[in-house]
Image 1 (cartoon, rainbow, N blue to C red):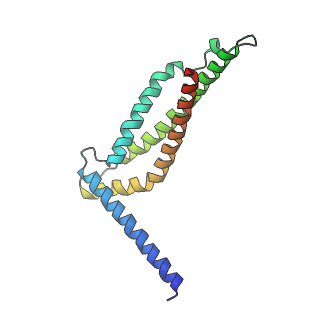
Image 2: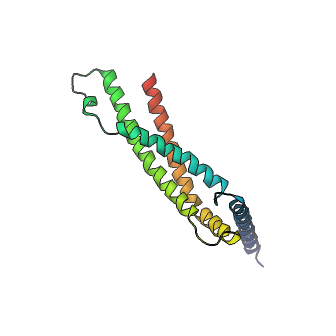
Length: 158
């Protein structure tokens, strides 16, 4: 057998064993959970549900207020504050959309049907692993949005 082919096969076997181990570990985690979801998914649900609730409380002020639209005679500080307020509102709407997408994925993972037990846990673990890339992308976008929000809020307080 060609050495390159042997290394390729060995790499594939290692990758499969790693995937199988992760799948079994996640199945065990879900099977032992009272919430019928992995601890990681449970934590994501709690954090982003809280963030969505915070966004809902801010929704009252998310519309552009005509009183903040400043004319040519407005001072520079007020114009800067208005720009930050509008940016915060826009970013919070973006954050809300990503939170809703992530929570929708989590709800779909929670709703995997079937008789309770190891088989349902296995199916939930497989679905979680298949959706993990999409969930990580959404988390990354949310983290970037939150960082930008923090910068705008800090700019307002200085």
